[in-house]
Every structure is written in structure tokens, then in C-alpha cells.
Length: 376
Ligand SMILES: Cc1ncc(COP(=O)(O)O)c(C=O)c1O
Image 1 (tube, protein in one colour):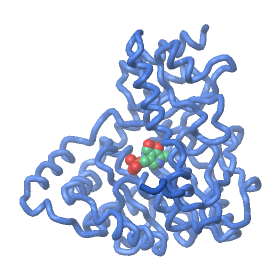
Image 2 (cartoon, helix red, strand yellow; image 1 turned 45 degrees about the vertical axis):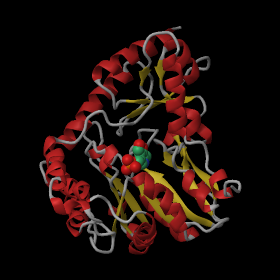
Image 3 (cartoon, protein in one colour; image 1 turned 90 degrees about the horizontal axis):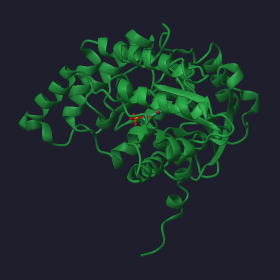
Image 4 (tube, protein in one colour; image 1 turned 60 degrees about the vertical axis):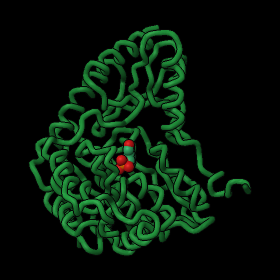
């Protein structure tokens, strides 16, 4: 066989795969069981009526053929209705909504659909570790826009590149910074897009996981957003459906069409019962969405008793480790796995991310270990 094509060689290490391998290796060594607060994998699934809808649909003999390539029209209408009623955004379900098998798929595909080889994709720093993969496959250059901790982790566009920029990725509520968007940030992103001809890609994976009475803020609710960009909405976090692999790319019709075009070739639809259950999730009782946020807020408060940090939403706390303490030492000496900041972009070194998406019991044991490590 010939060597791997360069586009595969360009892919960075898969951060979460490598993290999981390190945690598994540490767990195999003698000692207390590892407490894993490293992964953002929702610990609670969707409400029972969603699982029932899946089972019911899967029991229908007609469920098993190819689904429409571009998603069930009722699913596209259901997400458009959520955008209208919850986020205050009008969307045309036929032209401004693309159904994707998880937004991680779209994170990569949007770079393929927007960036030419040699053009630049601008990522926030800190970033979500899966963001560099798409630019790598596209053969695009990576650049960053710094998120300033002193400015509530908002992007400093004065320090973003101006030349050859194909796309700007943003993510609020932010993973890993756990910050929400501030007034003016989305407007400035739109100005930047006009100035540079870049498209804006907003990752809204934690749309509804907000603390302290905050309301959701969609990028698409900003005037002019649809002219320059799209937003990704995921069923994983709001509804606890991470393993189901379902999400959406919404907004700019040309970009939605490019994603659909790629997926006509590469994905060929999503299993119909998953789509039907997602319709049930989006149109059924919504109490579970707020309940999730309340649970994470309660756990956030427990963590903030131990570390000095701010967390306004998501299910993370992002904090600076003391000089002498590393995530590696926490793992090997204290049997506590956190997500090391190094994978979250150039400014992540010396930081770590704690996940709240674990049981209360696991979190308490983890916090006990962290408290003792910080006291050492
Ligand atoms: C910021 C961010 N975007 C996207 C995703 C991926 O979501 P999905 O399950 O829809 O692929 C995650 C998952 O952890 C995330 O943290």
C-alpha cells in the first residue's frame, strides 16, 4: 500500500481519544479507582418519552430503509420552531437548516465547505480541541483570535488576522472557558466577516446550559448574522443525546447547501427513528432542558468552593492550576483525571477543565482529591 495521503498526516492527535487512553492506562496501575472529571459526556440521557419515541419508530417495519438525504421535513420544521420560540430567530426550514450526524461532523465539514487550501481558518484561543481537525483536512492555515480572560473571554478582534481568512469559529457558551457571550461580540464578529470576507461559524453546543438566571443567546439573533454565517445546534447537551449523533447547521442558505451537498455524498441521511425521536424531544415537554442546567449549576457551585474560577454556563469549570501542579500529576499521584489545558489551544498551558457531567457522588470524590492536591 502507498503511504497515507498527506491530508490524513496533517490531522492533529485526537485529543479526547488520547486523554481516554492516558486515563485507561493510569486506571490499570495499582491504586484507588481513577475519578474521571475529564470528559464532557452527559451523564443523564434524554427523557423517557424520547427513548419511547425511538423504540416505537424502530419497531415500525418501514423504519429501516434509507431516510431522506437531507432530513425529515418535520425535523427541520421542529428545530426551526425551537429557534423561533426559544432563541427569537426566524429560519426557513427548507433552505436554512441542514441536518447533520452530530455537530462534530459539521465542525470538520464547515472547514471543508468554506476554506480553500492555503486560506486561513481563525479559531478562538482557547479553543475546543476538535476545531483544528477541519482546517487540517482542508489544507488551510490555522490562526487564532485570543479570548481575553480579563474581558470575560471575549475575542479581541484587533489581534485577529485580516488576510486570506475563510472562516472564523466562535463558541458561546464557551467550552472550555464556560463564559457566555457579551453584548457586542457577535456584532463585532459580523463586522470582521464583512471586513475580511470570512464566514462566521458559531458553535452553540451548550445553547441552553446557562447558570444564574441567564437566557440563551443565539448568534443568529444578531442582525445581519445570516448574511455571513451559520450556527451549529446539537441535540447532545440540551437533551442528553450525545451518543445519538444528531445536530444542525442553521442560518446562511449557501453554507447550509454546501453542508447538504457534502453530506449527500458522504452521509446519506440519518436513521429515521433517531430523527423521529428528536422531533419528540424538540416538540415535547421541555422541563428536562432547564432541569439539566439547574443540576450543572448546583455542581458548579460545589466546584467553586474548591477552585478560584468563573463558570457562567456549559458543564465545565476552567481554572488555572497552581505552578507546581499539573494535570499529569493529578492523574498519577492523586488518581484524578481532568482535561489538561494544553489541548485547548496555545494559551491553554497551565490550565485545566473540570467536567460537571458526572454523578454527584463522583464529583464529590473528585473534589476531595482536588482539594487535597491543592493543599499539598
Ligand atoms: C464546543 C463543542 N462543540 C461541539 C461538540 C460536539 O457535539 P456533537 O455531540 O453534536 O458532535 C462538543 C461536544 O463536547 C463541544 O463541546
